[in-house]
Image (cartoon, rainbow, N blue to C red; front, side):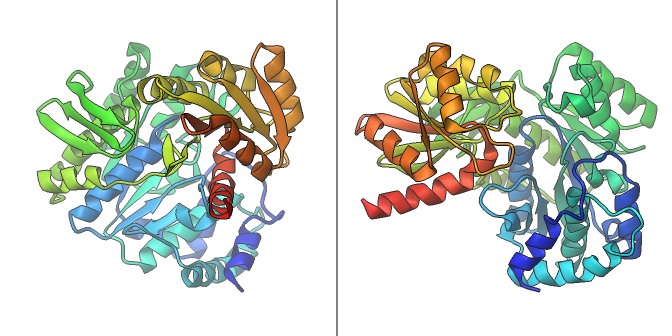
Length: 426
């Protein structure tokens, strides 16, 4: 088996889509000797900010000298990103070795696992083989019935910002979604939450009381931005002064506040994390695809935001960082997304939209998106092919504009690769 064959197997048609329930994952892990029980975790759920929070937490733990696993989804540029140890993606050799180990075990199951469940099982085995001291484990969707929730009580369970997403599975109110996500809170554990509405916090408080979970709420009252530009930002957070963070956007300061609460919970559990580890971990963290400056000349920014809360953050970032620039938007969306809600908030901030067709069975054709945008008063054109769209954006932006690509995480890797090829060709 090659690495490509391993990935093809994982993506194969044998596996169904998202099917709630832990039984399949538990059954496969039992056949594997329950590797998930040999690890310690920071378990992170939420609607937005899970990945950024996980990346910051893992960066701090690495600086503290711990062998740190990081499990995230979806990937941005390539599948291997989903499993990292000490900042290094899983190698082709390790991916093949673990997949070859898991494949025959999965083939004996009466009810086969879903793709996500299979990837989770591969990840648990990989982290055990790499002797990880701790794994920062990002939930795929929801919490209670997500495949990652097969783990026993983590060192700390975390819930980031909550909004309305995947409502057909998780519920159509933020309170119902909070209830599902709080399924990661285990009896006698520790929890950290991103501050929310009183009704959402009341859900977490009730569940923590029922399960004897110590609850920490991130301190947003003391968050104060000192400076920000396209290279990063400096901010205060309560007693913490002049924290340096390369991740852009006001929301990342609040995510960092959550991370500071996570480190307090970990220290209470006996983990040796100093102020220097925290500052250096935050200062050096990387997390691609979130208002990510991938080229400075020409200025080209990629943002994977695709739900209403992400778009609100994007609008604020445009106002904060690009107020003096003409914005040309490179956009492509999936047909099943609420693209009307996605584009309405940014209309007045974008000079022109250039539409491309995502490489997905769920794609919305570029010309159809452009027609929709023109119908609601925007200036838009369809380009179809990605290279053609990027070249057109660069032409429209000129020397004083910026190209902002947003709409879907699933196009980001191809956009960055194509941009690099275009710039090299010019």
